[in-house]
Structure formats: structure tokens, C-alpha cells
Amino acid sequence: MNYKKELRRYQPYLDYIKEYSCSLNAASGSKVDANANVENKNVTTLTGELYKKDGIGINRLRMYQKLAEMFGEKYAERYIDQLENHEIYKHDETNPLLPYCVSITMYPFLFDGLRNLGGGSGAPHNLDSFAGSFINLCFAIASQFAGAVSTPEFLSYMDYFVRKEYGDDYYLHADTVVDLSSRRRTIDKVICDKFEQIVYSLNQPAAARSFQSIFWNIAYFDKPYFNGLFENFVFPDGSTMKWDSVSWLQKRFMKWFNKERCKQILTFPVETLNLLDNGENYVDTEWADFAAEMLSEGHSFFNYHSSSVDSLASCCRLRNELQDNTFSFTLGAGGVSTGSKCVITINMNRLIQNAVRNDKDIKVALSGQVDDVHKYLLAYDALLQDSFNAKLLPVYDAGYISLEKQFLTIGINGLVEGAEYLGYSISPDDNEYCNFVNELLSVIYQKNKAARTSDVMFNTEYVPAENLGVKNSKWDKEDGYFSPRECYNSYFYLVDDVDTTPIDKFILHGKTMTGNLDGGAALHLNLDEHLSKEQYKHLMKVAIKTGCSYWTVNVPNTICNDCGHISKHHLDHCEKCGSKNIDYATRVIGYLKRVSNFSEARQKEAKKRYYAKA
Image 1: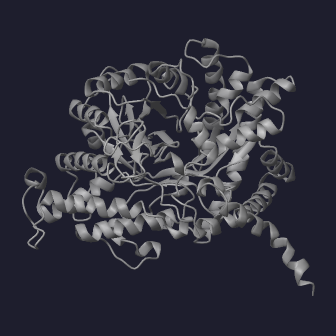
Image 2: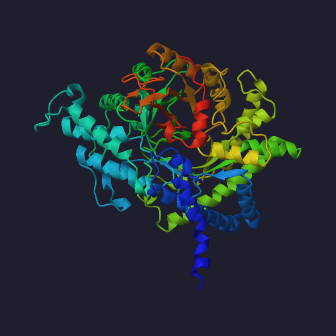
């Protein structure tokens, strides 16, 4: 046997090992899934990347066969053609078996612990066992999804176990010493130690995720949201949730987490604060005031507001109107859990230019593309249903999530670039641009609505596109399309435009533009320095007036590479030792990382971002 000839087919793998070894960092070395959620190059990440093209091939074959079975060879061929021609993109295509992302209800955890997921530990009975089991739960859930895991009930459940230990009024005497060891810890210190245990554990790289930490998201609620969501909630022992203690614990966690990020760049959890407004002001003035206070202290979290408790934000990508308010909500509590089973993104820039080249109406072209993507998503949904029927998805069997409550998601990328190709100004002052965007998003929204059944739901997301924004730009340039920048925008404005004011950005991500987006469309407000509490209060009111329901603030944190000091301010030197050897931390898209951990392409993009003067 000619072993040399037989083994030669592995040469591309060896070539890639060399290429990865010589790369700037792990993100730059990852050809398929470059993301900043890895600190350093390592063999574990390399091993995961090595076989990702094989994963893509397996994924495409499974999809081809299922599409041919369900809709005929024509659509199977078209699916592969569209992927190869970069008209569409299937996110996390390297994982041929996994659903995309999830927001779970933790209720089964209270009864069975991890046993219903194949683990050995039963239900938690005290604060210690809750903390340890919760960490294991997050890793167990994350191992069965390609993307993020959201646990919106985390702090509400933690409060339950704190109350079991120290009484319902523990927050009124948090300075009481309860630890009789030499440490003499107070209730507050015990709680903060649990925060530390959980957060640092979940920020650790995991071998099962190619040495990435899990993508973990949590939620905070103001009083009307909390009451609307949890008024019918009952713990296994018959007790109910208590707003006063949950509110205190939410605030304590935010304060602790913000301070802890001055010691270590902690990426997760990604936080979303849900607030109710009445069209003019926030209903819970105490929590609105606290939100402004935290923003002024440099804490970076997502703000979501709604005029009724029938809509919530989850992770960085989901917004959903509720069908009922009887303890069921999109973040995952009670009877309704959510997430995306699959995300397929349309390259809007290429679609628009192809329509113009072929003298075809853009809306008609988009309508046809949405019809096709619906079929592709339904095929992947059928594959997941096959896995569920084969008992391969224990998270679903255990009741943490149900397939029919997750979305099939159509992503959008390159929309701004397509509008530029047509000559529109990317500004709220250009009514033609705003109308154009609304008309296209309306096409997708109406088709998603019409295609909904009792078993499947579709939504639309302006995808974060950490990888895809770079890839689509590169592919379009190579194929001769108009491609004005090296990374396509993930917003309705240009991130490097110095003339687009913060108010313009609120308008562009307000109700006039996002009314037809039922998935993620977060405004990232880049500022060069933090505002005062009163200024943030004003911005929060601007969000209400413009109808910008989902937004966050990004001010680069300064990290000293010499002494390790971290400042919440955007500086050109270390405020502690004076060194100019510094790095910055900001959101690559939805999560906080050192800029030096970004891929080379994203580092270039980060340098071009415009940070408005405070």
C-alpha cells in the first residue's frame, strides 16, 4: 500500500497547524470561526478549528438530503449554491448537530438538579449547592448549543436560597456576621463570595467549547416587570418570590460586578436591564435612577424598555412579544423558553446589487429569498426534530426549553452597504433611506408572520456579525461587488461616521426603523468618556421619545500592560503608573474583551470606530 499517497490528503491539515501557530492571536488564526472569546493561542482551540471544515461538509450534506426529501432536489441544489455564492450564510455551520442559542427556564433544576441532563447531582437545597450546581448546569446546557445561554431567573433563584439561609429580610441586616470561622464573614460577604465563585467559574475557558468560556447572559427587572412576570410563580416548597429582596440582590450584583471589572476583564455575563415606561417616563423611578447611577459609574449593560409587560429582551439577539402574561415570557421563565434554533443570514448588499443588475424589483427579489430561507430553516428544524425523537436533546426532554418555543431566525447583514450602493445617505435626515429600510424589513416581517404555525416561529435579526461582517465584505470585493468598507455594519448607522450624533443613532434605532425587527437590533452608543448621572437620565428619556427600546453604552476601558491596572476611562496612559504600554477593552460586538484579543480584521475595524465626545 502506498502510505505516502494515502496520508497526503492530510497535508492541508498540517498546513493549517503551521498557519495557526504563526498567527497574531487565536481569533486571527481561526479561519472559520474567528472570535475574540479566546485569550491566547492554544492546542485546544487549534484542535477544535482543525476539523471545522469537516463539520461544515457534514452539515451541508445533512441539509442537502433533508431539503431534497422535503422540497425536492431543486432547493437542495439552490441551498448549496447560495452558500457557495455567499448570498446567504448559516451561522455556526461547523456544528452539524446543535441548535443555535437558548434562554432557559431553570424550574426543572429546582426539582431534579442535573440528573435529568445525565449528571449525578440532585436538586440544590442550600446556597452552597445552588452555586456549585448552577455552574455545572450552565456548562451542561452550553455544551448542547452552538451559541449563547441565557439564565434570566439566576438572581431570583439565588435570592430564594439566600432567604432560606438567612431569612426573608436578610438584605435589611446584610452586615450581620454569620460565619463563625476565623473569616467572620457577614451575609453580604457570603453573597459576594458566591457571586465570585459563579462569575469567575463561568468565565473560565472550557475544553468542550474549544477553550472558550460559555456565552452567558442574565437579566434584571424593575418592579412592574418583576410583578408581571413572577406574580404566579411558586417554588417547590410553596413559597413565592419576594420583590424587595430580589431588587436588593440585583443591585448588589450590579455593584459588585462593576467593581470586579476593575480587577479583571470579565466578559460574562452579558446583562440586560428590562424597564417599563409609560411613553414619557419610566414607571419604576427608583430602578431608572439606579440604572443612570450605574451607567455614570462606568458599568456597561444593555437597556431594554417597553410600554407594556408583554415584550422582553434576551441575550443580544432576541426580542419577542408575549402571547399571554400568565407567567410565561421570552427570557425563559415558567412555561415559555426561547432562543434561536438556527440563524441563516441574507447578504443584503449582494441581494440588492444582483436585483439592480438583473433589472428586478428589490422587494420582489427579497420576497423570493425569504421564501427560500424559510425552506432552509424548516429543513434544519426537521433535523433537530429527528434528533429530539432519537432522544439526543436531553435539554428539551428535561423541560428547560421546547423546540416549538424557539425561533427560526433570518439574519440581515450588509443592508447599510446596499443602501449606500443605491446612493442613499445613512442618516435620519434622509427620508428615502429610512423608507427604503422599512420597506425591506416589512417584507421579511410580513412573510415571517404569515409563515408562523403552531410548531414554528420565524423572526428577523440584525446579526452582530463578528465574523460575517468581515467575510461578506471580503467575498463581495472578490466577486466585483460594491463593498465600501472592510467590515459590514451591524447597525442602521455607520460606526466610523463622525457626523452621526448620539441622538441621530437613537433615532436610527428607534421605532421608525426597528418596528419590523422582532429580533436583535441593539444600539451601541460609543462615547469617549462617561456621562454624569443626570446626563444618563436624559439619554434614557431620549430612548423613550425616539422609541429606541434596546441600547447600550460603550466607553473603552484602559488596561495597563505593565502594572495591570484597569480604568473605566478612555485614556492614553495608565492613570496609576503612567505607562503608555496600554490596551483597551470594549465590546467586539455584544461582549467585552481586550481589543488585542480581536481578530486582525476586527482590530482594524475597532480603530475606525468613532467615539462621540462626552
